Length: 429
Image (cartoon, rainbow, N blue to C red; front, side):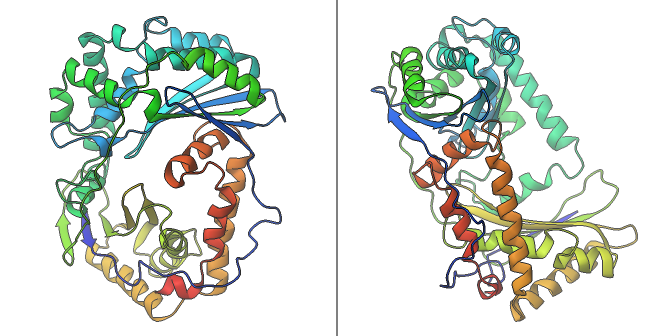
């Protein structure tokens, strides 16, 4: 497969043009909420939804792989696993057992910017869910042992083998990050970290990581569902109120990324079909051009009628698939296009066809219909997330997401309006 990194071009970036917003939905998207902060610094967001007797608990710790240092990568994801290994009052295995007995489920995830844990269940299980989250926030260290760290280290290393080393095309994204971001940039390495760094992680390293980042002052708790704000506050104060505040977390912005021209690389892997990757350094989430780039990705490869899919898969029949996406994160962003070659076709042929379509888009703006289709796709995704209170991307998770990235939980309608303002001319530029 072949990867090509380039600095952002006029095709990939566009400026928003002023015009009245397109009404993406007939009704404004509002998620009413109340928020309060405990004396120890824990911020709490409560959204009441009494449509069904369920409740979602969503905890965001403001720590991800971007908070790691070279030589100490993979800690944030490793710690996500350790958080399920038992705390002082909840022995190993009891966390899941108690939730299952109450009819609730749970999960966690780690990104460059945050670590997220959630529990979803019947409304009467809320005290249990909050108790479990509070115990591992306040009382995990006494039960943390070298044996637990070693066990989860092995689990994460095996996950890396399955998702990276032994997975077709699995090493492509890691190689793109290494070439797109300099070695001292916090997005230079993948969330899962390197095998060597995971192997070198000691019990003391993990303890220090917990003490610095897993504190009330570095977390936000969102509760959504069949609960009143008053009852939620009483429960949160009961279970979290006595946990020590913890140190303030300070972050130094990284230096600007500078990609000098086009950087190419050819990687050999055990794959049946070659694949070409193009990546551009772009903009962080919610900056001026972020939504425009999302629309551009949809115009290029958002479905079978999109430009690259139609040209490469249907007309030329040189590719089996084409994908494009804007990946804006808290401090930076990248735009990617990749395509897998059909048997008998090579990477050069794919690259020339992709370049030709990008030039066409630079020369002539997409049609209003193409842009409207992308906007409709965004609206459908928003409405889908609004249908549930819990899980990844549900209302509790979205409240946390907006709160951390833009500073206010209720950003749903304004987020939609970003896409409504995108014009064909903006996508072209």
